Amino acid sequence: MADYDVIIAGGGLAGTITAQSISHYSNQNLKILIVDRSPEFLPGRKSLAGWVCGDACSKEAVDYMTNRIKIAWTRPEIEHDVKGVMAYSPDKETAIPFDGAGFMLNRQKLPEIQNERCRKMGIEFVFEINLTGLIYEGQQVVGVQGIDNKTKQPFKKTSRIVIDATGVTSMLRNGLQNSTKVEKRIDRRDLESTGRYIMYFDQGEKDLSEFDPDYCIIHLDQDIAPGGYGWVFPKADNKVNIGLGVEKSLLERRNKRLGKKDNVESLMKEYLHRNKAIKNPRLSEDPEDINNNSGVFQVSVRRQNDCMVSGGYMMVGDSAWMPKPIDAGGIGPALIAGTILGNNVVKALEANDVSEVGLWQYNLDFIKEYGYKTAGLELFRRLVQQMSNEQISYGMKHFLGNMDVESISKGEHPDFSGLGKIGMIIRGAMNKTVADGLRYTSKQNQWLVDHYNNYPKNPSGFDEWNKTLHQRLDEAFAKVEAFGK
Ligand SMILES: Cc1cc2nc3c(=O)[nH]c(=O)nc-3n(C[C@H](O)[C@H](O)[C@H](O)COP(=O)(O)OP(=O)(O)OC[C@H]3O[C@@H](n4cnc5c(N)ncnc54)[C@H](O)[C@@H]3O)c2cc1C
Image (tube, rainbow, N blue to C red; front, side, top):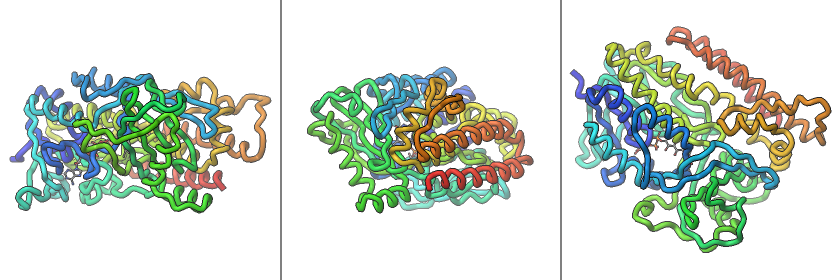
C-alpha cells in the first residue's frame, strides 16, 4: 500500500492550490503530502533569490478558484488592489488596458497563509527535501525520491499519484521515464530572463505612464527590454514592484545594435533610474519583503506542455509551462489549473484508474478552460518579438480596433479585423510587413484554436494530433521569423 494517496512535489503557489482543491473535492478524505526543498520558515520560495515575481494577478482568476473550492484570498496576502494592466507602446502614444481588476500579492506572505490553510485541512508537509526523481513500477509512477537536506539521508515516499509542481526547472519532468508524449525540455527562446525590485520611493514627477497607483504599467520597448517588457506595478502610493524580462538572443542582438554589453541586472538598474516618477528608491525592508526584495529568475512564455499526464504523474503551474505566452502571467493559469486538477485527481482515484488513460481528462479540461488559446498567443509573441519599436508603436496605434482591444483584455488573440477595412492606408513597406504579420498570426490562431478544440479524447489519438500541431507551428515560427528580416 502506498504511503499517501497523493504526493505534491513542490509547495509553491500551484502546489498548495492543487492540494487544497483535492482536499475540497474529496471532502478531506484523501491522504496528501506536500514535499518542498525550502525551509519551513521560507515556504514556497522559488529559489535562493526569493519568490521572484511581478506579484500581479487578475481578480477573475482568484474568483475562479474561490467560487469552486471556497478558498478566499484577502489581506495580508493581497497587498494592493488595481483596476487593470496598461500596456504602453514604445513611443508612449498608445496605451491598451487589459486583464481587468486585479490584485498585487505579497508572495512571501501568501505561502505562509496557504500552508496554514492546508494544515487545517489535514494536508501534511515535509520541508528541506531536494527531490531528484520519481519512483516507477513498470510504466507507472509510484512515488518520489530525493535527499533530505537536514539529515543528508535519502528520502523516498510512495503515492498513487504524484503531482509535479516544482516550477519551471522541474527535475521530475526533465527525467520523466514513462512517457513519450510529455515534452521534457524547453526551447531557450521560450524562456525569459526576468528580474525585479520591491521598493519604497518618494514621489517624483507626476506621470501616470511611469507610475500609477491604480494600474499595473507595462512598457513595450526593444531597447529597454528586448523580446520582453518592463513593468511598474504599484504596491501602495509609495511602493512598487519594478522589473523587466528579456529574451537572451534578442538581448544579444540589441546589444550588438547599440554597441552595449548589458545584462538583465544592468537593464533593471537603468530602467529604474530612468523612471522620473520614482525618486530616491530603496529596497523594502518590511518583514514581509525582507527575503524577497530583489532577484532574478526565469519564466516560460510558450503554450503549456502538449501532454500534462503520464501513468501516475500530472503537472501543474510552471513545471507544465503554463504562464501566458504574451505576458508571462503564471498565477492565473496556476489558479485555474490547480482548481481543475483537484477535481480530476479525485475522480481518477475514485475510479481507481491512475493510468495515463485514467488521468487524461485533465489535458482536456485545462484546454477547454484556458489552454485552447496559448499556442496562438505563443505565435503572436514571436511576431511581436521580431518587431522594431517603430513597428510596435505603429501597429498599436493603427491596427487595433475596439474588438481587438476587448480580445486582448480577455487574454485572447486579437483578430485585427480593422486590417481588412477597405481604404485602410498603411504607410510604408515596413508597416505593411507588420500588417501582413498580424493578418498571418490571426489566421493561424483560428486554426490553432480549432486544433486544440479537437484535442484527442484519449492517448491513442495524441501522436497524430501532436504531429499535425508541430508541423503547423514549425512552419508558422519560420514564417514569423522571416517578418523580422
Ligand atoms: C520575474 C518574474 C515576474 C513574474 N511576474 C508575474 C506576474 O506579475 N503575474 C503572474 O501571474 N505571474 C508572474 N510570474 C510567473 C509566476 O511567478 C509563476 O507562474 C508562479 O510562481 C508559478 O508557481 P508554481 O507554483 O508553478 O512554481 P514556483 O512558484 O516556482 O514554485 C515551485 C516550488 O517547488 C519547489 N521546488 C522546486 N524544485 C524542487 C525540488 N527539486 N525539490 C523540492 N521542491 C522543489 C520550490 O521550492 C517552490 O516552492 C513572474 C515570474 C517571474 C520569474
